[in-house]
Image (cartoon, one colour):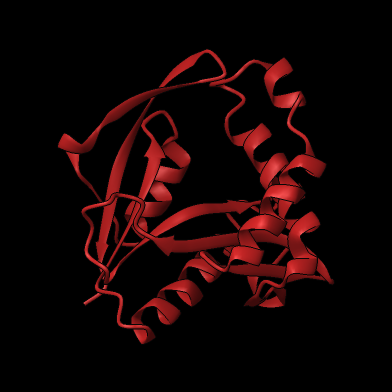
Length: 174
């Protein structure tokens, strides 16, 4: 589907079920090489919907959605940097997903460009994100969008019995 048929808009709480659907389906496809199919199949759209409603109700994150033919096909959520010693002008991409059937169509780029425009207008100087080291598709996207990996930032954690490594990326917005 061409990116020019996609509209980017601010998310509203009523979008939570559709955001949850994108989140679950994207996660299941993007991380099939990292997690067992059983763990991925157990992801619950109703549970993610509750989490998204709560998050949106709290107002901590700013979420944009990509909509095509009245269906949400992607989203990006940005909020304060999660590290306690961070500068108040820094922001962090907390979640960024596009339905797999819309990968490489420009939807992700459209979401990022709109988010970047809003961040710059708000006076954000730096944006950061964390990405699994073993996620080459996402890493290529972020690097093409101007993010730079910080090699000494690699950290490990465990999720669903899998030890994962993630790396911090930064982008100076001016």
